Image 1: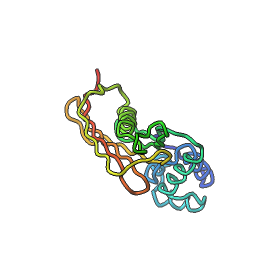
Image 2 (image 1 turned 180 degrees about the vertical axis):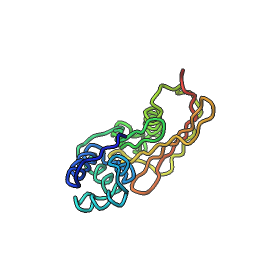
Image 3 (image 1 turned 135 degrees about the vertical axis):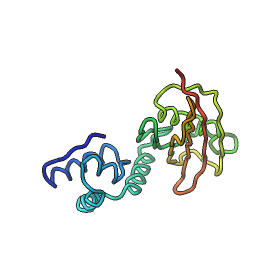
Image 4 (image 1 turned 90 degrees about the vertical axis):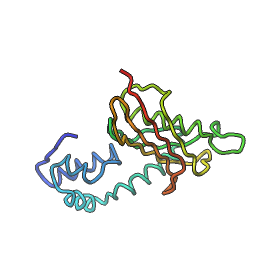
Length: 180
């Protein structure tokens, strides 16, 4: 992120509001680095502008995602080579005969998010480990979080978790060899 130093508090607050409209996933620490001020200053600015903390902004994004009727994986924020954040809403077509979303659809969305986080093509036939913890039904809005946790040679370990509210419903671990 580039460091921006608006000349006045009002200019900084206008720029802060604009930055959060473009990307509601920015943390207070991210914003502090962007504007060259302390995290406490950012919190005061958000309070003065009546901008909620990141968790509330994300929940609002999930609510608007559901009301827009969007389905599938929508990537909201990616810091390539480190982490990413997305929304996933399964369709009726993804439901199996029992009425809930098949693991293959969640695995596919997890693999897509992992590839976006990696930022480069990878061989999809690598080690993968999944855990489907709670049934996911069509129409649910899920938050997907992904992070690259470690590197060993040309292999990267990427963990993707899907959440419904605070409950983890699905997780996947990928050990990927990055294509050259």
